[in-house]
Amino acid sequence: MLGSAIALTLLAAAAWLMRHRVPSLSPSNKCLLQLLVEQLAALLQLTQLWAVLGRLRHPVSSGTETDEQTSSDPVLSLLEVFQFTSAEVQNFLALECVYDGVAVRSLFALATPLVPLLILLLCSCVEIFSRGLGIRVGLKILTVLFIGGASGSAQLLGCQEVDGAGVPLKDFSYRPLFPQQRCNEAPWVDRIGWTTALCYGVFIPCFLGFLFAEQNVIMRKVKMVNIQTAFQEGKVLVRLQGLTAEQSLKDWDTMLTKRLVCGAAAYVAVRVKGRAVVELAKDAVMVTPAEGLGASGSGEVESLVFGSDAEELEALQCHVMAQMLMERSILEQEEDRVMLGAKQLFLKYAKCENVWMEVCVKVTAAALVSVVAVNNLWLSVAITLGMALVIGLTRPFVQPQLNVLQTACFACLAVAAVGFRYHVALARLALAVPFGLLLVQLRHPDSPEMLALRLQQDRKGGSGERGWEGQSFFLFADVESDHAAVVRH
Image: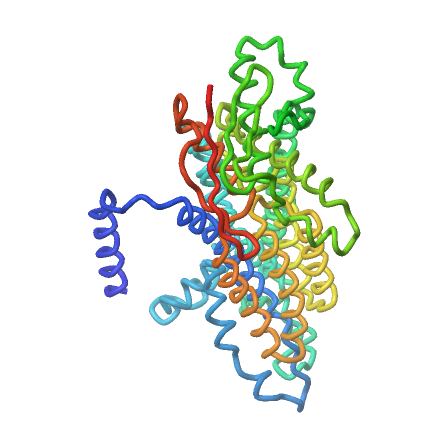
């Protein structure tokens, strides 16, 4: 403990001294870092749920024990630490050897589901004094502690009804977290368990559902906007339709310019390879590709498999991307307390309305914890495969690589559930696959969506005729090409 404290202190001091000496990252490195942060969050969720599925290991029958069943899995024991539960702190510090064992076990068993809820309560108090900060911190806390808290809540309601050989205990059934108590004793444990389960399974998903409803009202006007393109003397004329309801606003001209910039950035990211000159007119944008138009390649698979029209897919992608950029433009100016606090959460998705996926993931995690608690293998497989199918079909995240990784994670969790029941090596292999996929994706971290975001940010960061000048890198389908746009007023 002393060595860990000294090491952390030295690292913190070094980071503080070097904070002003860190060189600025190039656009490609920034894109790589953004992708890596989101990927690590997805893999953290994977390891937490993988450790939860570890409780599906086949129950030992009398006289049929095997070495694999009777020995603990070192990988599972290691990854349980990433659930960040108080039980792992208890195991690390071995406080039962120093203090009263019953009291220590009881305290940490209650702390596992209660501490995350208490932290969220503190975040709500912070929100009163700092607008948006409490919600922002609370959502980050949920990403790390939600699965561990929900798992601890389910364990509070658990009851050990068989011994190590599978023989029923009958009247001697006891609570695993409170071995000194029979299952029909200490009803206060059930009250705490059901209360915390209600918070994790109902209240928290309902709050995320409220975020979905809130953004749906604020972003409603963006959904009415459509991009219209027309070719004129070697140039592409980009116009926006559906803005008539906003023309009465006093800042209409500024708003229209921002919307046109979003439309132009989306068109350049999807259709243009190389340089392009973008001219802002009064109610339209003229895009002049220096090297002609090119296909993004994002719709080639769907065109090949389903026979879809590639032009239609690109037009749809351009429309969705423009809507994404307009929503981000609105979020930058939004002062609503809830939207301000949840801004980082919304930026993770291609469209703000896709925040429903956050609700779906939290409900899925809570349901999976409950199903594993009753040792139901095939329902666990159905839940994880269903979630993989939902993410794969809807592709809610702004980064295409993250859509693929999340789909692979839930599919591998389904395989891991089967592996824990029949052969642990299969579960370990399923855990390793997403990590290998991450390494492959880091070779090509860019995408048309990230390019469009950089074009929009470069336009906001510039001034005059140099609003979009500069270079950014686009890596897609093993092709590296330079993208630049120049804005002329």
